[in-house]
Image (tube, rainbow, N blue to C red; front, top):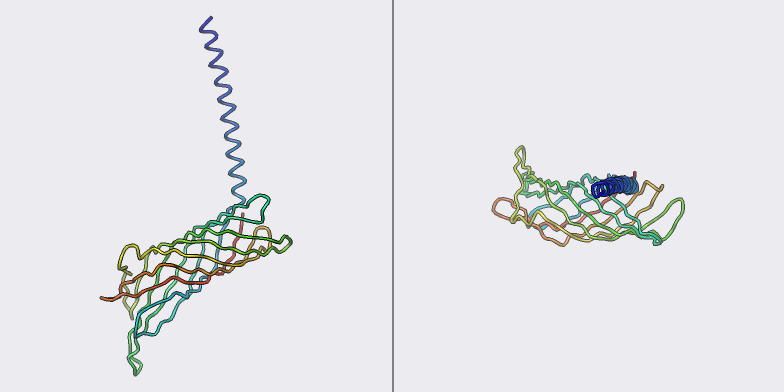
Length: 218
């Protein structure tokens, strides 16, 4: 009698466990499905306006590519959304030491970065075309870099390992052309001063730039 009751209890427990498992699977699938609608991609260009300090040279800056994946989470009952992203971008600049008579040395700096921006979007209007404002913070890390001089190049070095890092503020505007497609422009102002090695001296770089891109939500 005891074994029969115990067996019935085990059977009931297994049935409940299977039901809980199926409910959990459907809940997870539903959550993933709803979240997948918020993921997207971003592609665009980044205009380099970084502050560069190195005396006695002519400085020119180079624009680059920016792109990656994004995630948008809307706040219920409010015209607010949170946008997070993992972006790759590259940029560069050149230092020309003009010695006159069409002679001199030009150093070309190039860097590849990984950037993690987190912004708040405010969309006060609704309609076929929906404008928005955004503001937030970002952090970035220099994955690699190089210095080119004439026909030679070498890996970019940093005064300290922390000089690979940067963080700063973001402000921007944009417009949703469709519920899935948005065009935006942002300004990024870095707070760090990074020191790049050039021979036995250092080039001080303060990250600044404008990003223009398209976001597409799946």
